[in-house]
Length: 212
Image (cartoon, rainbow, N blue to C red):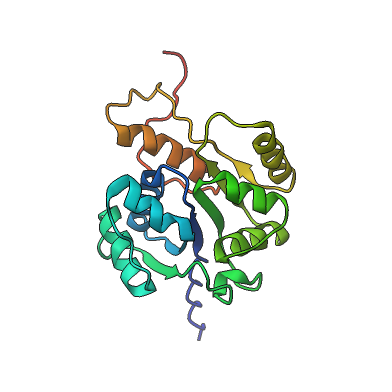
């Protein structure tokens, strides 16, 4: 009598880090497609995200993790698909703060230059920075989507340091060859290219097919 096949282990979660850089639409669109594709997401937003939501959208982001989950699902327009766990920015004892907690990697979208500078210097003053530092030390994938222009020499040197340490840098620079018709089309291009670095293909994107 043959033994039953073991059940497949659940896929490790992906960490989604969100900083106070302008352009929170990038985070919302990334979360939308990841949840729709049934990924498990560990989300951590930095302290400054609260202020940016208020400034850019006139929206107040709740502080409690349970309320944050509902908030982010409402922003992404995905009520039940996927699994979403939200962490307070100050909870440096959370699961994602430890290298023993297995993940698919981490994407920080959008990523502020303040966060870039701290990561390049090896500083971890909150959970987001600690989680990113863990990905680097464990040799896991870390994708940064900086939303800044122009880059100063300090910015470029910090980004170079992180690239040398193994991070992938995907600036929020859209393309036009996919014939974008809306702002969301431009945003989705950047989101798709960022997730490509994690071998995740869940964004409906017209990819380059060769000559025009």
